[in-house]
Length: 84
Image (cartoon, rainbow, N blue to C red; front, top):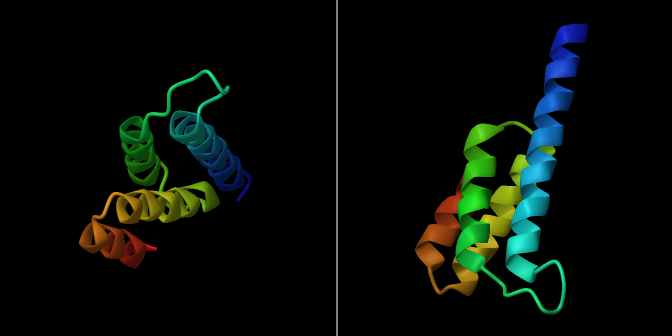
């Protein structure tokens, strides 16, 4: 049981790190930094596929769906939301 809990905590930390990276790409770390939504989508997709079954991966799917919806890709957004 202890090893499984440790593994889940490691997965959650990794997923949270990827989520922070995606936020940074989407909104920029500073006012002078250029936003990069495509990079954010790439990181969010990676987050979802690498560390499934974590709270951060679920959050990444929601954010990815929102990015797709904002990009006028409603069908892809609905499909992403359906995964959750």
